[in-house]
Image 1 (cartoon, rainbow, N blue to C red):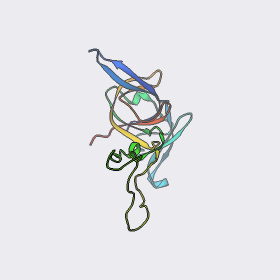
Image 2: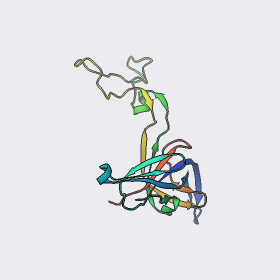
Image 3: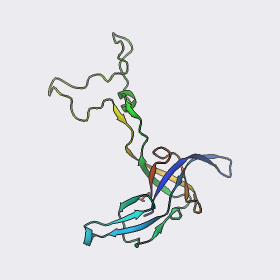
Image 4: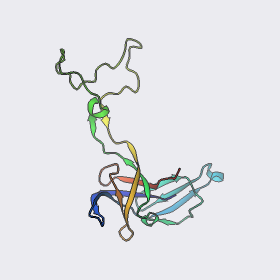
Length: 184
């Protein structure tokens, strides 16, 4: 399984030979080394622990493919590979129910005044309290999001850069997990 951690640098665009423009996200991915291999016999589960100069990351899965000290860099991917990119979405702070959950709001007529963006009813007569999980205003964003079906446009091995077609989650500088899509 191909897997690497990277840092989002920003959006750009790539021109192909027909003159068509492809929007891409440029990701800087430092080389990672295999720091530890966990086995089912010793630890009770199979996993590989990767690390680079700043971050350690554990990846559960195929431990048989790697050996201790192996270096994994952007060269594991090639142009045209289909990938899944995971990361933390942008935090948007405290938002109302219309923006956070897509509620339609109250009608603008029939006696309603100053309540167009309100939630409306949040409960019922019994059990006379607000139920857990009720969609209301609150903090939005900052969740782990995965975008599947993105493709690698180009790989720059000298500068450790990947150009991924389309948008990926998170702000500039956010840590991303890039892994090859498994074929079903």
